[in-house]
Image 1 (tube, helix red, strand yellow):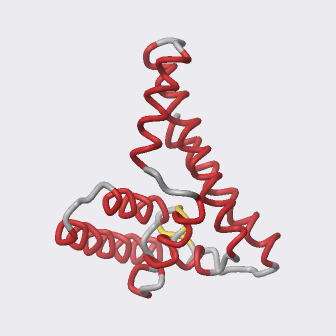
Image 2: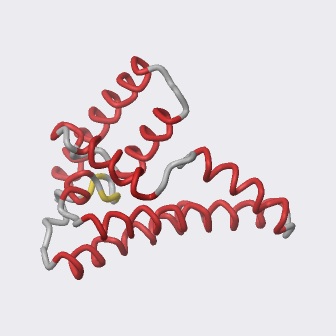
Length: 158
């Protein structure tokens, strides 16, 4: 259920971007494994990027809360606290504007373009949590390899 909600939220965002920016992006290059990637992100204007960050957060929050309630039964106060803690681990102490700037910096490197947006958010979380840069660099290298492999597989299937 969690993946379903997040996927639905992420799948609707390209339409939002096209409506607000007036641009048509090549859907194949703006997605990796079905998820929006850095190519998609770089085509957005700043306001749409902020909308994406908030929508992503809302989608993750809803998915986590729904999953927690269905797994343990409804106890909204307990579940909301757990979900809030998890969301804070994803975007700890950052404003939406700071998240946007961090994602802009990540995707300023063309080699990060194919990396799916949820993976970029994970990198941001690692940085904010103080994970050593060498570990983050290893993780990003693995993300790049996986993204390229995924794009090649998708290209072969079309």
